Amino acid sequence: MRQLQYADAGMDMKKYILCLFQKIPLVLGATVIGALLGALVYTMVRTVPESQRQYRAFSKIYLDFAADETGEVYQEYNGYTWNDLMATDPILDLTMENLPADYGREEVMAATEASILSDLRLLTVTITTHNAERTDAILQAANQALETYGEQAKEFIQIRTIQSTQAQLAVADSRMAQAVLVGLLLGLALSLLWVNLYYVLDDRIMAASDVRKVTNVSFLGYPLAGEFFQKDYEHQIVHLQEKMGKILVYDAVQKEALSMEKLTKLREADGVVLTVPYGKMHGTYLAYVIEMLTAQECSLCGVAIRDGDEKFLKRYYGSITDKA
Image (tube, rainbow, N blue to C red; front, side, top):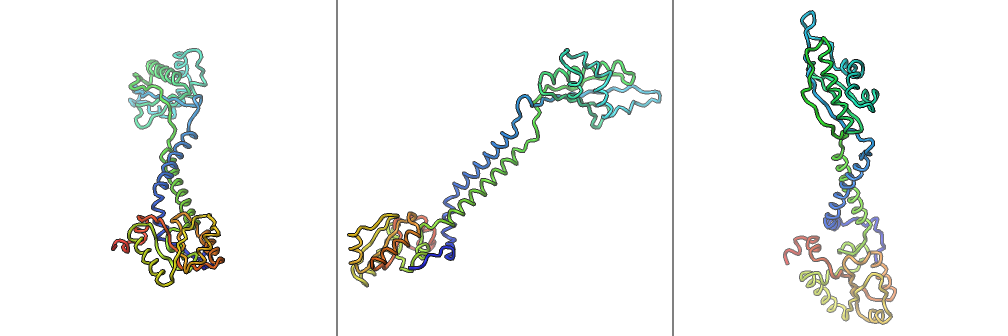
């Protein structure tokens, strides 16, 4: 019997790849679960409590400037100036007059932002608060204040609101796609790592190469694994009987002890053929069984793997079986 040295035995890559293909549904499932977990974790982390949610509304204000003494419009009204004007008198006073008494100046100032993007005549006013109704109320009051200011200030012919929106929940920059991708990649990587580790450590007997890691005794084939393999196995048994005489077949089972009666019969036989179940016995246990048979002075003349997966074996041996 060969001394077990799995670390030096190498890996049967063809068997490994075929087994890996069988785990593709598992890998795909783990990948999908990883993506779902990524989305779930991101949702939990990014969910904002009701009291901290922000509601935003904006309006577009058209500024119709009057001509100054030189005949030019008042160019000094830029974005920075308007942001200051909205938070100071007289516009802030006008805004507060259009609001109920429970609205404070600090609240209105903190909620209001005014900016001019490209056209000096087009002002954007944005209101952001933690309550949709208060957002709408402040925006409406600010619009009215600006229209009134346009009637009072000499720099303007008119200020009018040309567009106004209702308060909407302000959604933070979404990274959901990135979270799903990270979860997907982690699910894929971890599942592949687990499958690889599993098959590296897996010493179940599935092919002739697994038997050779344990013993130098002849491999006799795959009984009960389809017509092609069954015929080859039967030919091997007939050859052994012609060569050695009485041959007994011992169908070993993982962790099943041999009875004294069975051992006696095996010792009396001219030769013993040991069959192990496909994928259900580990190489370490096969080594143990062979040691026991050797200790009992049984003449072990071959090992076979019974009840094999015919589809797997045909893929494993390829064109050899296709010629059958």
